[in-house]
Length: 450
Image (cartoon, rainbow, N blue to C red; front, top):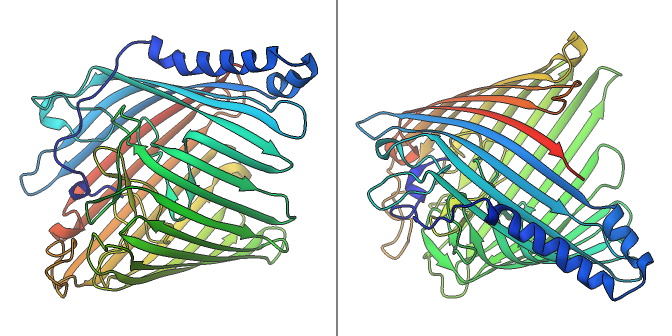
């Protein structure tokens, strides 16, 4: 979701240039782990070292957002160096490990009149930074198939998830536990107190109710996914955004094979959100759901989807960091490239077509197009103490057409290099983001160093 009204003021101009900051947390993580191991037997280190992974991803990103109604366009071209380290675990009943990352971003093109893409921090005077970097780490403990982490992480729960749609991913700071000790059941829980958005280096950035623009001290969540048989999965989650909302999520996914080349997929998502505690965003009572059915025939997939927002507030979710840039904690079926189609009382439908060229002789190439239309938006009935009051009108509407192509090299020296082109045309009322033509060209080249 890309609507600019979910940001707060001018993006922070905190940035930290220098290659040393890219490698510092990685070095600290490795050195700290080695120091820990040096006091024990060499056998303890086998899992820690042997299962370690170090990956450098070279990311080249061109972003252009052409906005109507005399709004400034957003455009830049950036180069990122994303280093990720994941250690294994020491031997023994309780295994110990470290995860660390270091990111460096460089401006290749961009100016003060085209800021706000989410790929570069902005200085005073609205000048995008020439370079910036950030880094972090988390310690982890493993018992059986249960892993506990503390530090900067990348949560991906349906009620709290970071976004990876820009040059740098978001991160969140806190603790989490993920367990797969029970067969066919994944369970997880977390407590997070701060976050870092894509263009900030402040690891103590805020958590937000994104659309309401209200800060929260913490978020707690728990849930899991159960897959009793092949082709069937059920997910249930609950979350509390401190003094703002309690949110509950459910998903049912069914895949039925009709033949070796045909299948049917059904997917249903439900969110129920109500205010809690001091209700700092005002009264909230929202139930939103989406339904989708997909038919796959060989390399082609045809999908139809329906989504309904029930409530005078939008289907809101958590924003991250100093700039309140939205995360990815909304898994409704019509949450697409630019818009989530999650406005108050909005109803929307989607038609989508996917084509995988593998069986046509071009493995690694895929194409997708979809059209989504939303109507009946009405946010005019909110009380004066609602943080959402005034964001929407009484008869707003929107529509969006997306095209996407992706190619991943399958062999050779550049094996794994991916080229992704994403284009969105959005038209709608000002409350939905207005008229925007957005293009993203992303080239990723992952290099496995360990």
